Image (cartoon, rainbow over all chains, first blue to last red; front, side, top):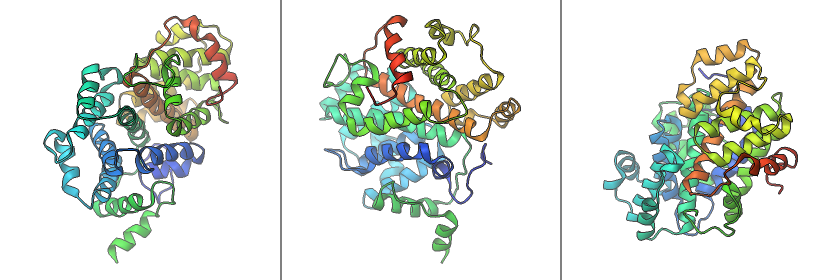
Length: 192
Length: 179
């Protein structure tokens, strides 16, 4: 049960967005900018994989499941690649540049100061630009926030994979700023 | 020197990063403004103490010192508050409710799942409301982001406490994203 009285129709961060619209607005604009808006060189799928990976390291079930589902839909409905990144990025079928960026993301997750010059050099040698390094660090840092927010208030985090798939498909298509489904309605759709 | 080439390398800490990438700078400063200066039953001084304490626990010198200086500006306590936060606030008058909220913030700093039912119950016994608990968790979580952003890109920060006095005054009384 959540630590505070949250709306029951919405899981995870969506229940928190409903509870406190004043903070929801900048939080939602940040994720829209980082993960969905056009980027000079990183695809939405690549950025979602970084968010999913960091959420996995922080063991946040809701964030890892929903961003994994969004990544899957951004990557041509490829669930396998998401699973492989979560298992071990080094052996996943992703670019060497993304592997180097995921190493930086993991360092950020364990503490910002853990990122050292050789981590940056490795990413640069694989072709990473300054803005890619910047955005990777900020995506990793931001998910150290979202994950703590979602877990720290003990939000409802469903186990239903079909539900995450449905929500992920919506977010991949529409971005983050449109209204969420009520989960009861989503469940009805899945079961119909 | 920062890990990436900033547009203005004289700007310290997060200031140089907000200037480098205004698209992300806007929601980041909007979030700080609403969390630390927006309408709340917690004073801005109390909220800045939470932000500064979390930043200290994360080892982020720039965020700890600048937000402690902002707390000092709100509370008119003098810059000794910066070091008092490091020591767990032995010299600063702090309500039992704020001490309980700081404990929740410390749990969040380690991992969100560390917050227990008992932590919440104790905080409620000192009069904390749902929205105060919510905002404390989100302030703590947000500084786990800001701190990693500032340190993860290797930004520079002024050393001594006195170097943050004017910045703290502006953060407290002008606001975020406005200077």
